[in-house]
Amino acid sequence: MMPESLYSFLDTNNVAQTPMGRLIRFIWIDKQKKEFQIGLKIAQRNSLDVDVDLALGFASHYCKIGTMECLVEEGNAIAFLGPLMRAAERGCMQVVQWFVQRGCRDMELCLALTAATSSSQVGIAAYLLPHVPQHVLAALSIEILKAAGERSGGSLDGIAFLFHSDFLGDPVATYAVADSIARSDDEAVAPDLKAYLQEHWSEAAFLDGLRREQDHYVNIMRILRWGGSPICLRDLPGPLRVAITYLPLYRECLAVHGRLLSQRLRGQLVEAARRLDGRPVNEKSQGKELLAVLEHHLPLFLLCGSNVA
Image (cartoon, rainbow, N blue to C red; front, side, top):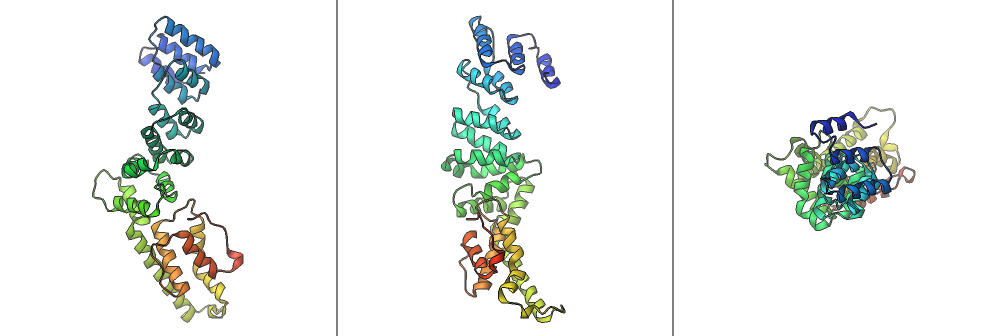
């Protein structure tokens, strides 16, 4: 049965009994592709006013792939952008894949990625990201993030996905974009986005991570020296003391889904690695290298695999 909203659209716009209206009804009842081709050819042969691009939008909304193929192949529909973006926003993978496989322009892919990111459709964003050329992402990265943040509706999971995925393919560049937005005075930047980047992905977040871990180390030393627990922590084997101190941080890093750690976590890891190795650590080091230091000192039975780069 056709949805009430679609009936309302047809009636409101006085197209219910027009060739376009009949075509939309034809899409909804999901005729076989061959039958739809016949109907479309009859309309074209009689010079009936059929908006194939509008029909493509309806067909894609209801995931009528056969009808979409007919509208593009037989009706020469070319307006992919609107339907592609709406499918990305809804998380309709089948429709998004169909458009991408048919061939989309770089800007269409970029806008679809923005739509998926703003709606926190992480699966769609993960599919689209490799299809957007790196030079396009680099040129439009700030605009993509600002637009996604403005339309996020309160959830920044899509933006977190882009950063954890190292969407620019270079940790230094990805962190720099985050820091640039976090420092920006541009009123177009959504407050929630700016606060999130300041707390987790900015250079200030890295320094905060260093301070947090320094404070944590001081607190652990106080417990070891003056703690009143009947278990004397100083008498435990070194690897167990390391586990007590750093296992929560280690597990928090392992829980990250993606290649790149936030700047805050990376700052904590840098300070932890410095304490454990007893020597300076390159502050540009990335997650995998820093996690290796923790794993070297932790008990073997506590170690797990990591996807962090």
